Each structure stands twice: as C-alpha cells, then as structure tokens.
Length: 324
Image 1 (spheres, helix red, strand yellow):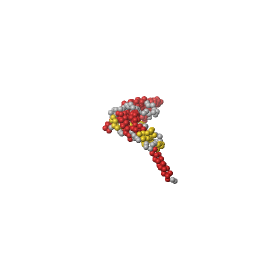
Image 2 (spheres, rainbow, N blue to C red; image 1 turned 180 degrees about the vertical axis):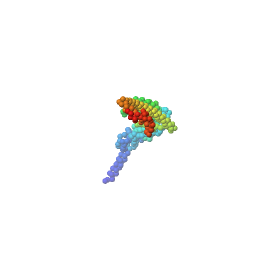
Image 3 (tube, rainbow, N blue to C red; image 1 turned 90 degrees about the vertical axis):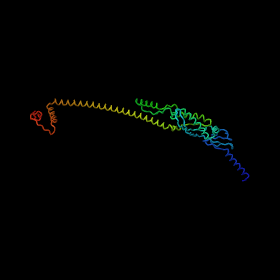
C-alpha cells in the first residue's frame, strides 16, 4: 500500500474521531442537559434520551430529571399558643425549568441552599400562626368505623354519648390539621421556588418535639391527666360493681322469699293432708287410734332401761292388762 495515501487517510480518520468525540454526547433517561457556549445557555434544554451533537467548543451541563429529597435542619419555633417546639421537615423536589435552574442556582448544591432558606422561612411562618394541636393531629376528627355493628341498648347509647361529650371537652378543638398545614407550606414554598426553576412535590412535618426545658413539665401534666382519667374509670367501675352486687342481693332475696313461700304452702298442704288422714283413721276405728296413741305415749314416757313401780290398777297399764 502506498504510504502517501495511507497517512492522509489515517489523519482523516483521527480528525473524524476527534470531531465526533468533541461534538457527540449522550443523554440518559434520568438526565436532562443544557448546552452552554462560553457560560451562556444555547438553545432549548435537551430532555430526550439518546445521542446528540453540538459544536466542539460548547459545554454540556447535565441535570437530574428524577425527584430529589431535601432534609431540613430541626428548628425551634414558637406556636400561636406560646409553646416552643422543635420542628423537623423533609421535602421532595425536582428541576422543572432546567434553563432557569442553571441561570439562577447553577447546580443542586445551590438549589438546596435556596430550598433551605425558603422552606425554613415558610415553615416557621405557618407553624407560628397556628396552635400546637394543628401541627400534631392529622385530621379534624377521628375516623368512623364503617363496619356494621349490633344496635346498642338505650343505656349504652346514653353512656357512649356522655363519654364522647366528656372526651370532646377534654380535647382541644382543631380547625385545619397537620395535612392542611403541610399543604399551606407547599403552596407558599412553590411560589418562592418557582423563580429558580424548582418544583416542590410535597413537604412533610417529620418530627415535632417539645423543647427540653418544658418537656418534663409536659410529661408530668400528661401523667397526672392519665392518672385522673384512670381514677375516674376506677371509681366508675367500683360504682358499677356496687350496682351489680345490689342487683344480685335483690334477686337472691326474691328467690329466697319465693322459695320460702312455696315451702310453706307445701308444708301447709301436707299438714292438712296428715290431719285429714288422722281424722279419717280415728273416725274409722277409735279404739285402734287410742291403741296407737297409747303406744306412742309408752315410747316417750318409758325410756330404755327405765324402771317404774306402779300399782296394778293404774290406768297407764290398762292396755297391758288387756281388760278389753
């Protein structure tokens, strides 16, 4: 092969490879790219995955298209009802406008710095304008079980209604709830971060805790409240026990009196029947009745191993003398 032809061909191939490597770039499915020329963006953002080409002196800036996480630092915030709490928030965000993002914050570190300032400020503003219970409870009211249940008795309904009213008096009323506060934070933060090409997906109050100086007092108050409720339940139980015991005693007395009444009726009927039989036997044979009564008198009057000295004409021994 002629060297005069081979060398220019190799040079052409090398130049072609160099031009290809300096002008071609690949964009992955999870990326988006901005092409800059001397630091200034050129053209529209590249969001379609695949192989793309640009001029050799231009630079390709790659940005993430996925949803990114942001974790804030715990902040001490006073609530509307003057309670100091530590609030720890977390959020999810993504780059909505790559061109505006590059021009304003340049990279993800700059974006997180902006998010820190906006979300911390918005969270402090929302929490400080509401009572503590709004940030603690999720919804306005407890969920109602939709499963069918047996129809309660009138006494049970009254008792349940009274207990619910007592609980409602103890619990502090809420107007919005934790979810509404999170939505307010999102709305305000979205307006503040839109100018940086950032979209906030959601914000969650990850942890809410009392300040250490008041935490022990809060725990003591919670313990005393639970003890008071326990004492109330215990006293109600004792009253219910006394009520049940009284009902048992009353039922027992009713059963005993009814049994005594029936026993006396049966005893009276038996005595009447015995008298009727005795009277019939006496009327049928008076001598035989006299004989039986005499034998009973002997049995009671003459115990075992007893000796009597009587005259022969004593009437007590008439039946033994067999005069009749």
